[in-house]
Image (tube, rainbow, N blue to C red; front, side, top):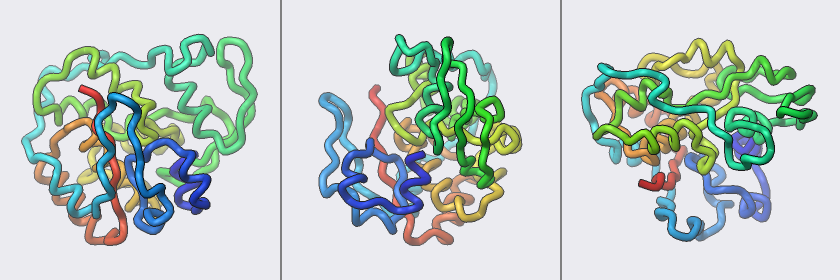
Length: 238
């Protein structure tokens, strides 16, 4: 899983081959390629920012839950490779495997292993994984500054163009998180808190989402605890 690899450290050559990251601990920022080029026609990648500064870029607004329905965000769609028989959820699970599972007809997965970042648990059965929207769908709805189109909501719900929007974690940790923001919930694995905060902030910036005041204060508190953590993000296409 890319997040795990970053936490463990990689040589510069290997990092140069990875996709653009939404959040990178500062300890590894010096081994990123000096110039990261976005795909042709895509918005530019923002340079690394200290977590404090990144939080300050997010607009502050009251949440608005009225009218939210989960099915406003169509998921899971056919994924990036429509012909592989795997929907977005299965593609994320395959991409984040530490040990690759066997893939049978209909994208049935057997074997393999994963590390659940939220609780630092090793999972050896894909059926025990949830693919979490890092910023939960209800939180996205609360945080939209103007109502999104159905197409933009589907794009968020199935976003594999950033390695951070979706994450495979243990079902138990995902159910514990539910639709809570960092003012209400943090991963049980404290060593992941800095990365969690940076990824949350990078995802909110990528999708031009607001924060409420309690959420902002929680993120600023995390930034105090994570002075070396930086955020890199690429704005999603409009």
